[in-house]
Each structure stands twice: as C-alpha cells, then as structure tokens.
Length: 273
Length: 286
Ligand SMILES: Nc1ncnc2c1ncn2[C@@H]1O[C@H](COP(=O)(O)OP(=O)(O)OP(=O)(O)O)[C@@H](O)[C@H]1O
Ligand SMILES: [Mg+2]
Image 1: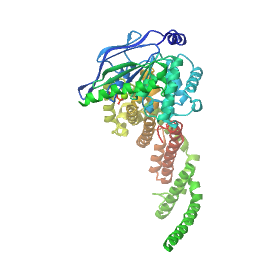
Image 2 (image 1 turned 135 degrees about the vertical axis):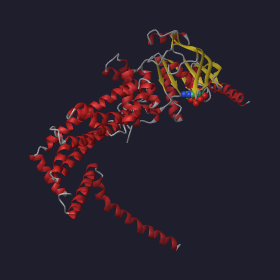
Image 3 (image 1 turned 90 degrees about the vertical axis):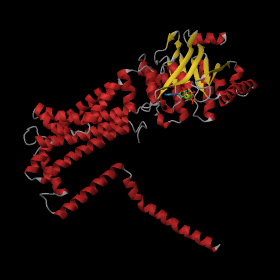
Image 4 (image 1 turned 180 degrees about the vertical axis):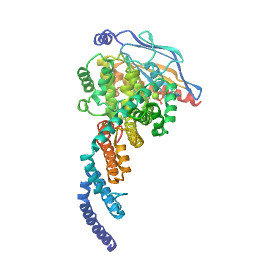
C-alpha cells in the first residue's frame, strides 16, 4: 500500500494502521466418519490495515475453510491466527462475514432491519440511529428503494447487496467474503465488483475475499494468494495493487489474468499426473 | 384444402363455447374467491346435510336436527349460563396451556445448551408424547384431588411434550447460515435463542402451538366428563355430561357445537392471523 492510501486509511478509520490479521502455518482438519480430512496445510498470510487479500483456487482447496477459521467458526489443527496480535478464540463482530448463500439474510426482517440488526445486537446505539445508518449503507449499495422489503421479495443480487450493506454498516475492521457474487449473472456481478472496489477505497476496511474467478480476484484484491491441491497449500502470491489492474480493458489486466491462469493450469496438470 | 377449412371451422365452433362456459362460471368463481364466503359455504352445506339426515332419522332424542340444536343452544345461553361454562373451561385451558408452553420453552432452551440435555428432552418427549394426557388423570386426582390443579396437571402434559418436540425440531432445522450469522454478531445464550432460533423456527413453533392447543382442548373436555359427576367447578364437558344423563340430546349437541365454535374462532381468529402476520409475510411458509 502506498503512503497516501495509508494516510487516508488512518484518517478515515481512526488510526487503523499496522498489522491487522496474521495466519501462520495454518492447518485445518475436519473429521468425517471418524477419519481426519486434511483441508488446508501450512498456509501463511499477513494483512496490513486496508489490504485486500483474495484467496483464489479450484473447488475443494480449502478457501472457505480458511475463511471460517478466520471468522472463528473452525479451530485450527495447528498453526495460529492472530487478530491485532490476539489469537482468535471464537466468532466476533470485529470480523463480519458475507456468506455465499442467499439465505444469510434473516427472512423475518426487512432489508433495513437486517442491516440494522448487528448494530442493535451490539447495543451501542438506539433503533432510530441504527436505522439511519442502515439506510445510509443501503444507499451505498444502491438499494434505497427497497428499504422495507422482506428478503424473499428481493432478487439474488439484491440480497447479496443487502448482506454487503449489513457488513459495511458494522464498520468492522475486517470483512470476510466467501464468493459473494458467485451465483449472480455476469452483468450484476461486474457492477457489484466495481461497487465493492469503490466502497473499499472509501471505507478502507481490511478484506479477505474468496473466489474462483481470476478476473474477479485481480479486480478486487491488492494481493492474490493462489491455493491448490488437497490439502490446500499456497501455490503463489501475487501483488495486484497497481491502478491499471483495476480496469478490465487494459493490457496489464489481461496479461496478469493470463499469468495467474497459468498457475491454476499447472496446478491442474500436476494433480492429473 | 377442404379438410383444413373444416377443421378451422371446428376450432371456431369450439372457442365460443369455452368463452361462454367461463362466463357462466364467472359469478360462482368470484363469489367463492373470498375465503370467508367459501368457508361459510362449507358450513351451510354441512348444516343442510345435518338437517336433512336428522329429518330422515326422525329421532330427536338420539339425533336432534340442526334447527333443534340451534334453539337448544340459544336456550342454554340465555337460561343455563352456557357461556359461563364455556368461559370456565377456556380459563382453565388457558392456564394449563400457557404453563405448558412456558415449561416447554424452558426445557427446550436448556436442550439447546448441550447434546446431553437435548437427548434427555428427546427421550422425555418420546416417552410422554404418545401417552394420552388423560391417562394421567387418575394419578392427578390422587395427588391433587378433584379440581383445577388436577386439570392443569393433565393439560400441562398434553401441551408440553408435543410443543417441545415441534420447537426442538424447528430449532434443529434452522439453516446453518443463519446460525453462523447470529454467532458472527456475537449472539450467545438466551439472546441467540430469542433473536435467531425462535424467529427462524417460527413455522414449527406455530404448528406446535396449534397441536398443543388441540391436544389441550381434547384433554380438558375429556377430563371434565370424568369430573362432571363430582366437581362443582363446571365447564363445558360437565355441561355435556349432565345433559346426556338427562337425555337432553339437543343440549349435548349445543355443548359440542360450542366446543367446535371455540376451536374455529381460535384457529381462524388467532392462529391464522398469527401466521399471516409472521411466517406468511416473511415468506417462510405459504
Ligand atoms: N464440514 C466438513 N466436514 C468434512 N470435510 C469438509 C467439511 N467442509 C469442508 N470439508 C472438506 O474440506 C476441503 C475444503 O473445503 P472448502 O469448503 O474449504 O473448499 P473451497 O475451496 O471453499 O471449495 P469451493 O470453491 O468449492 O467452495 C474439501 O475437501 C472438503 O471436502
Ligand atoms: Mg467454498
């Protein structure tokens, strides 16, 4: 991150600088019918405030598992995860997750109530104020016109945007997104990617973002960590912070996409061999 | 060529008939499109069938007609305090019902804490749910004597187990994502249950409330039939029992009609309203 961006981050988020999230030699193991299933092996990463790490890799390489571990839903089998130097012991509102599933909105709450929910749960502010923040956040994701709609009356893309608004409104230092746009059509997906990037520039949250899509990874991230294999390991780490990489039409964008596809391909042939 | 023309003509012939039929059915369809009208129609049909078969049977002592029952009902309401009997029943019912629901909520809350307690509750419901609560009445009479306490004891049994089972099942089918969302925001314990599990499981909980209500009603009327000979507290079951002894069959029917009427009012006035303002509105259930 360049110095100016860091300055802005410091100003806009009350001195949020420095190392935010650290995973060291992280291994994750599930149990299936009494047998251990190794999902992730010895993955490392470090995130400074305002960085956006994209976990990229084929299906089953453990991307969601890493996200779950950072969120505190899954205990590491070995290695550790530190948030501002403190080990993660369980889920908490300092790391808000946007899930891949469309049913992550609470169906008994309207869009506004869904977004205000984490604020009301935290009990720091009253209902009126929470609704005001919620309306703001929904405007940011372009949903001012459906404040009072229940989730089942919204389209899939709208639901995901409400979920993103709900994550933004918490002003959590860390946002964790698990393929939030995967089930959307290309058009909606492109628009939400651009919106998310703009919001990240504005709000300077630290982001871990999981995706299958190389284009999405380049567009969203400041850094991409390519994972592969079973159990999943780090294949490559690529910085994609340059501004010309945030535009699909540039030569640099196309070039780096091809480059990263190369990593994924070699990963595939290795497995086949 | 001529074949084609003829078949076209046939098509033209058919179409107006369809239109005409639709028109003829129009008034019927629009009248029956109102839910209220449809239900009323069902009730009217039932009353007509009843009246007709009673006329055929022609034995008012064993099978009074609809009109005889209605006049007996009016008489019972005016001169025999039927409404008071009904009120006494509903009051006891409500006490037992609410206590049963409250107890079940406490049990289920504990059951969500850990696997052992959940197993314990599941075992208890498996034991007591198939047991007709009324079978506990003799024991209740032994322990609590004749009176409200015994009634409430059996009512508690008739409500707690089916409602616990429905609620527990509802909690278990709360989508994983919604659970994770709740925990992500730092919800635990009672707040997690109240803010995530209960609303998410509301379709099951409401159906548990309905089942509990129906079981409680049955149990209460049955218990009052037993108590009728010896208790002074009255109630609808007692009204039915007493009138049967005196062979006032029309009043027995009036008592039964009252039981049914209260059931209908609760179903359509309370439970359906509850559903349409919650689970239907939220798209959790159609
Ligand atoms: N609850 C679970 N129990 C047992 N094994 C699991 C469980 N969840 C995931 N796994 C295993 O862990 C590995 C990694 O799963 P994970 O969901 O993290 O992959 P992913 O990279 O997110 O895949 P996708 O891109 O398809 O979402 C897989 O081999 C999977 O079978
Ligand atoms: Mg996944």
